Length: 361
Image (cartoon, rainbow, N blue to C red; front, side, top):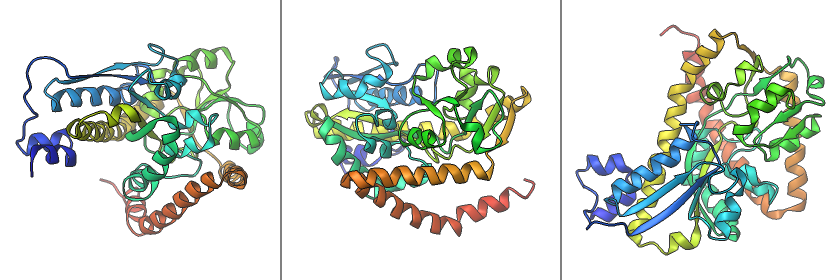
């Protein structure tokens, strides 16, 4: 197996373990790319994934492929990255695809939909089901190829200035949410969805412009300080059983790369994706303990609200399927894959986790 083949089939760790050093080149940079993130630098989990990609590309290429990473607002607004990729302003972006459902609801399937896939299920659907194939067929009209940038895992249900006891308590609630089909479902429940970048949320919540906010989970939420202005922290985030962040790559820029550089890009995105997901699993438990110690009131959504959310979500899916055959094709493929995953995990992970939660270790 030659060096190029090894790089293609292994992440950076695998390359180094195999004892195959990245190519040594003459001084100078062959390729310079710019990567625009939809997130602030303060989020070392999500934004850190973009930095890890750039670091890995530099290592794999011996410094010949340089990627500069830019936080939201530096080159363009957080939600301007798709337009920038489409017109060739940047070569890459790192974002949550459901931010762009205003362009087309199908974008949501690249990140998360209500009552959708968990992190492991999403990886499986994308890499070994039809997910990546279907999404890249859709993204092609925007001059985009996609790769995973990592997954947050199942998210929390957000921060609320007042207690949420019944579905009626959601009516009129002004809530920041990531976007996508979740917003349509919440609208059916009487919530007034607000889509804004993470960096703008704290002030809006503090001033009462917002009544609630959902973002990710304990580690990121603690960094953003939401617990200081909203005491009630609900779970689970039924709209994001596992939220996939994505690297969007300008398709023409990718096609112009040598096969070796393409393999490096693929390997570096895999390294960055795994690193981000692992960070969330490692850091969230510790952050949650700190939040509870700081008087955060941790509460589960009542079943009534979960059921109302499920009903509203299924109505949203049905409405989109009725007008878009492409939406229906992707949604039905995802649900078929999900049913198989749930069946298997009933006998494996679900049962194991349920038992381990009852014993002292």
